[in-house]
Image 1 (cartoon, rainbow, N blue to C red):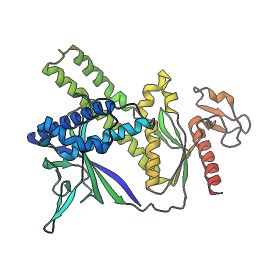
Image 2: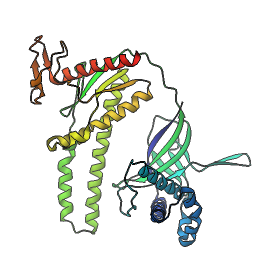
Image 3: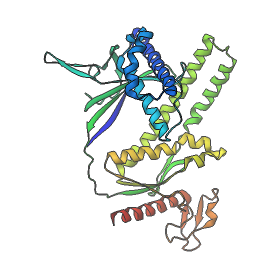
Image 4: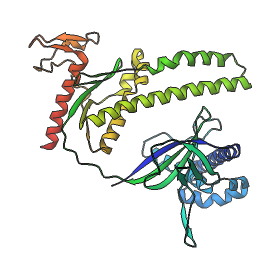
Length: 378
């Protein structure tokens, strides 16, 4: 089975390469906005836009200075955006702004053979730590120290600049992956929360590291500093960049934390069971919305789903309205009093079992997942 996998590297371009990257950002944005305006007036297909592109070269000759493949890719992106809009998957495409926080362009991998010599426009050399890109030539990279080369066939490369001023390249590779057939031996139920991010049916609790609190004071201080700066001054942009760096650190810390949790769960268990989360409804509660966004529960579920399918394991989600906290995991008695979130421990009036609210919920989730799994087998 062939699958796509991306590898992201930090780019260290020279001053001349930065100029070329910035030129490409501007040119791809111009092409996107130009044909977005045209497409709103006339019903153009992607082929029509590519066919008309040489006419735009005559109007704007500076477009020839950048990678032509990246300009065509921006038209593919525009066409894809309209398709998603017509399928009611997103809103109508909007014009790209010059000072947008998301700045990127994509270029496709092209290979050719001349006089028995193979030519490639994208090459990754992990031994020398360089990547060859169209118009940029060799650029220094960092990342994936444990790899000697990229597995599989390169499809495309996406060059991006984040708001902190750092450059990255994401290389998409097609790899042949055989999903292992695993006979389930270990199953775990997990309850997701705020104080403890993951509570397993084995009684293990993974505490919330409260990543927002680590950076919140520093971010607020810098934002107050930014408010005092004169808009457009050099100090204004310096402070703005420092805020962007803090947000980038916050994002990276959260990403690392989530991947550590999901990796541990997937490697130690063959079947993982959790509740289906309705995040939009949960975020409506103002008291907990900030902490929910910090924990990123939906992100944990989506990564678990992806990683279990990659390793040939199972991820089962039960109904979100299943009363996992109220039911006794020993006798099945339903205690309505436990609806109150302040009740963290309780004794079952039917069988006398003592329950920790979260561990009891994860055990009930486990039993519900086993039932669902057995029904699928039958």
